[in-house]
Length: 224
Image 1 (tube, rainbow, N blue to C red):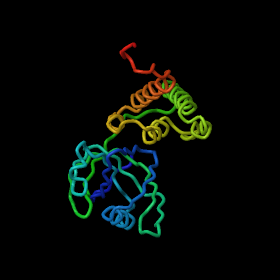
Image 2 (tube, rainbow, N blue to C red):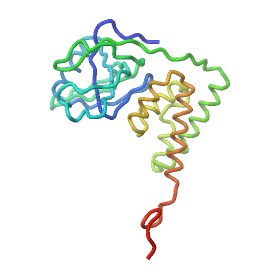
Image 3 (cartoon, helix red, strand yellow):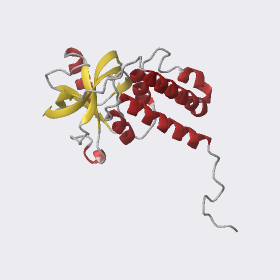
Image 4 (spheres, helix red, strand yellow):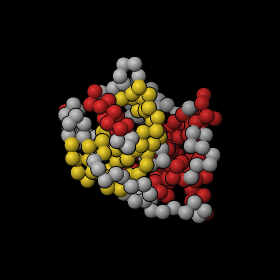
């Protein structure tokens, strides 16, 4: 397991984004304080911790809105400095973390981090291989219905040789599920349970996508 640095790490809190270990998150950085954060991170180990903002963040977005205590430490893998002084970068998730203490508030926050260990999963366990196969199948069927024009490309998003950890965490990062559900999955210590819950979400979303449209007027509408 990766271990976070002993020194405070820059925190990038967003309202709808949750990063998972072994996944890659593309980011466009345009706010002045976070452009400063990227420059500092590039000169100090390339580390940034992603956090999810708590509801009500809109009231204090340009100040210090509260964020949840569980997040993910990431390393900047690729970065492009744009002509308008903004940045496009890819952040690779390393390890789940708990924000132990905010040590800096301006111009961006930095916090001391505590790693959150996960239950070990032996890749040669038949149950792990069965779950990986079931998760891949659910994702392939979901992609074929939701993204028919790009189903083949999307089905291979996680890579044919990806482990269960890589597969489920990449899907959790990429799927368009509610942020609170993503956070609950990030907080799940068991990788098998995280995969089962992700697969259940895919199956529910697939059923919803296949469901016929309701009659005009909706359920319980009046008849003329």
